[in-house]
Amino acid sequence: MDKLIIHGGKKLKGEVDISGAKNAALPIIAASLLTSGYCVISRVPDLKDVMTMGRLLAKLGAGFQYKNRKATINTDGINFFEAPYDLVRTMRASILVLGPLLARFGKAKVSLPGGCAIGARPINLHLMGLAKMGADIKLESGYVIAKGKRLKGASIYLDTPTVTGTENLMMAASLANGITLLENSAGEPEVVDLANALISMGAKIKGAGESIIEIEGVDELRPINYSIIPDRIEAGTFMTIAGITAGDIIIKDCRPEHLDASMMKLKEVGLVFEHIAGGIRVIGPSRPKAADIKTMPYPGFPTDMQAQFMALMCLADGTSIIKETIFENRFMHVAELRRMGADISVEGGIATVKGTSKLKSAPLMATDLRASASLVVAALAAKGATVINRLYHLDRGYEKMEEKLLRLGADVRRVKE
Image 1 (tube, rainbow, N blue to C red):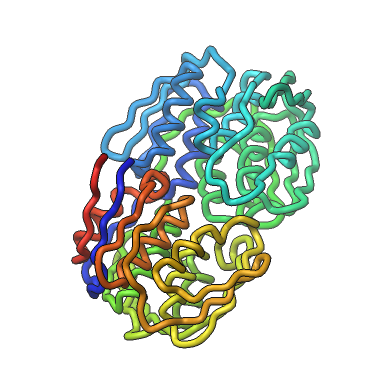
Image 2: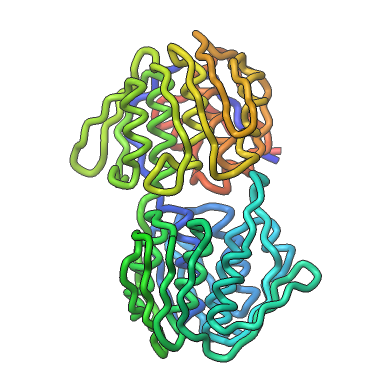
């Protein structure tokens, strides 16, 4: 397993290009299953999760080629309708093939998903919605087995605004007979990007990004040529990097409107933002001020930015209260930050961070995707050499992060084992 060695303490300066959003790319790749022919999807990040989704589509009989951040998918040859455990266990987003397979072919067998161990993320709302649309759903030996002729439009209320649940049901409803209403839907930009991709395929969708999404099913969808939105979480991560290193970073190809909640809090702790052509300039303070956050569904403060913000608060002037309301196990980075000298106490879903004047280097172990990013953020401010192990977590969501850091002046090196 690769590891990252970071000699921290440098003020980072320069430009960084933000990659396409992984959490938009994966459902849009899955959406190619809704049509027959060649789909071309641009600005697809070069990530392990993308390659896993490509292998999954190939297992189903699709042709999948990836070059220069462009995925070309030929779905003419789909002849297998099972997403096996050995692929699904490594990536939760694999469940997104369930809705498209069922809608187009009337059958699907998908292993219950895996991915980061950050808490329970059940798919019961996916299955409830598909059942309301007329599917016969069974759970057998760790697999979801779904059958049904053409799905029917239905009114579906989601008890919680699940992102993948909204996406799965929106894709399935695009080929259903009649109108489907998804109430209490997730409003993340990645959901909107999927809706826009589906609309470009010929789907009839209204209200994406709002609480109620209306989908009028059509008989068939056409192949697409589509470009993915920038990754807001990668952009937010580099903002915290500018903050913790007192840096001056121009973040290119990002959409600040997708980061309102994060940027409001980062301004509160002392970061300065300057909108420029093609991006945004971020200037970090000599020392950040403390601030409290509470993770919420979009447009609230994103749970995917909580760990990085906590790393920044480890060096803040004052005490910060961080409330995690989305995932119950998303404080696994706390133990590693403590190894660096951070003063953090946790009780239930609340972490209290007492800012210290410095962090020290230490050997660290990444536990999940965003936890690994928080360790990188902290290591860039710590004196000495910090070694981050289990780098495969970082590689699931950040494209060539060490190369981008090198261009900003960081002393960072990937060691392959």
